[in-house]
Amino acid sequence: MHEVIAALVTGRGEVDEPAWRALWDGIESNAVDRAEIAALLASLSTQLPDPESLRALVRSVRVGVEPWPGAVNIVGTGGGPRTFNISTAAAFTAAAMGVPVVKSGSRAYTGSAGSIDLLERLGVRMTKSLPETEDALAAWGVAFTGPFVYPSVLTRMARTLVPLGMRPFGKFLNALGPFIATVPVSAQVTGVSGAVSLSALRELAAAQERRIWLCANDFGADELLGFAHNVIHTNDGGPIRVSPGVLAGGEGGLDDLGEKPGSLVDHFLDVLAGKANRAALEAVALNAAALAVASGHTPAWPDAYRLAESALRDGAARSLVDRLRKHTAVLHA
Image 1 (cartoon, rainbow, N blue to C red):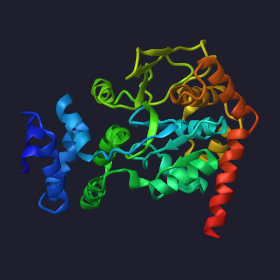
Image 2 (cartoon, helix red, strand yellow):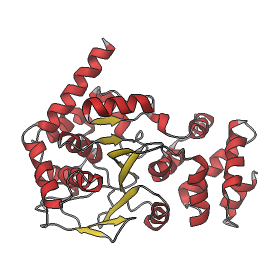
Image 3 (cartoon, helix red, strand yellow):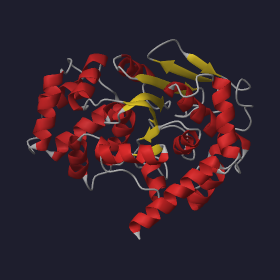
Image 4 (tube, one colour):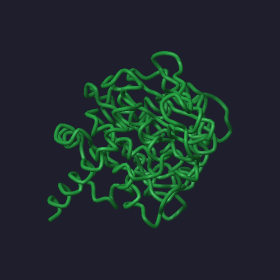
């Protein structure tokens, strides 16, 4: 067994950046076999390594790029209660407010549809390169990145595991994806579910130069919820607390945010048109407001939340997704 994998499985010793790089080189050259890769992902999915090893892992695969000023990403770790795709709805809503949003994401591994699954069903095109992403951001105010933003070694591991179950891979990617994806934004809002180590991600966030907000709440969801007591852990200041009744009214509960597998697209479009239940609209507005504040576009939370509600109520968010769907259809015609 490769020494890095052995160290992770046994929990003995730190793994430095050169060791991680040697592991990735071994995987790329097929010197690390399928069973070892499965053991690696099972270990990383069960328990993240110690803080220094985790920081070294991120440094070993992350590609540094100059951030686009004012651009912000929203992405969740997954693993929490199964809700509709709030973060993607928030991305459209914030973009309709004038916030430059570059959203990364993945396929579903525990729920019925991740952001990539949803965008495919909506008929919204994902970008295939950074130049294409920059062009989409300039044209539409929002861009949805495809899998190209993740290190190529992850794709090789995924292909090696087929047809083994992909849940360990998905859990690892969702937890660390926000920190290893090449998404050139100035700020990132990351929802952290109760299934992921918040303390480990806070250690990672502290080592990042860009602004990172880690959002957690008492329901274990990886989104801000209007009826929850939310805490946003920032890497550039103290925590931000968002509780019911301060911005959102706090109506409803988790049942109001459930997935709608049979009407995934219709329900999502209803949310963006302001036609969903109050709990769903408050959740989307809260997360869109977080994007506006984190990016610096709208510094005051009350103003940001009011503008987010307006973008849902007046149809601006729905109009944006309709224009993007039409554009994709024309490209594919």
